[in-house]
Image (cartoon, rainbow, N blue to C red; front, side):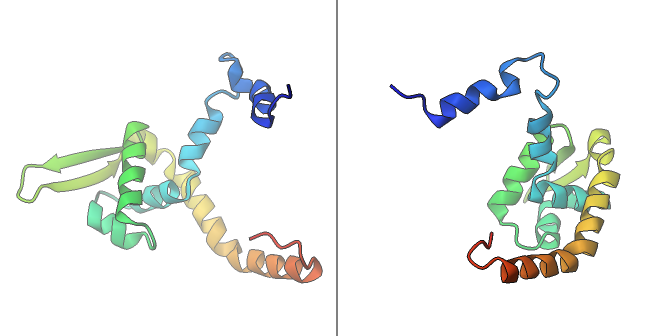
Length: 137
């Protein structure tokens, strides 16, 4: 009986050992490195926002994805959600101190992405032209 690929790689994961220094790093990086999380953090760096304000400011995010993203960020202690007893209920989101401590890093990444996007697009086009059939999209 052969061992499956997932069984082999599962044994290689450092987080099989809780004392391994990499445990937890991937989990946190998955959250703060997620495309939507980065954009929410960048937007909230400017101050408190209502749900619809966030949705309008983040091009392409669906209501469901924004809901999931803010819930995950709240669960991780990176933002707070405040519900006001109005009809309809008004909800605002704001970065916590922990979330605010990320903003300079996330903004640097966003600025770098914006400044590098044209060069990266040129590199991709050049790669695709020089490596027909090997394009990665």
